[in-house]
Amino acid sequence: MSTKLWNESLVLRKVKYTLEIDGKLIVIENVPARVNLETGEQLFSPETTERLQKMVWEQKKPSRVIQVPVFDFA
Image (tube, rainbow, N blue to C red; front, side, top):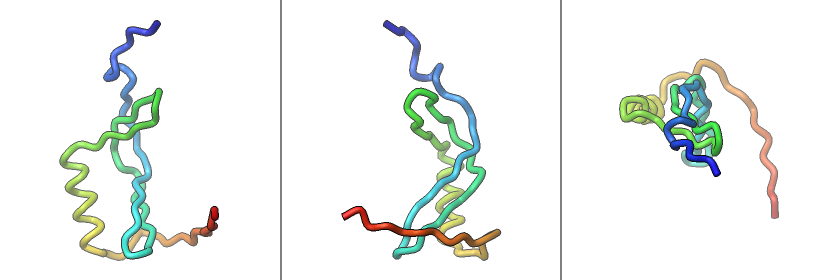
């Protein structure tokens, strides 16, 4: 049985943050996060969360645009 603490599984990584607003998919790349190596859970600092919200609501021109295929599972 492992006695490893949850914090010992966290590493600092750059991740992609995705969200959907009004049917539009938004992707923000290179976001710093602490990632749990065992579960993949991503934890963001309060400062990072605040910056993410500001970036989304300012609606500045993105650095690039990608096309995303959408499939219906039903």
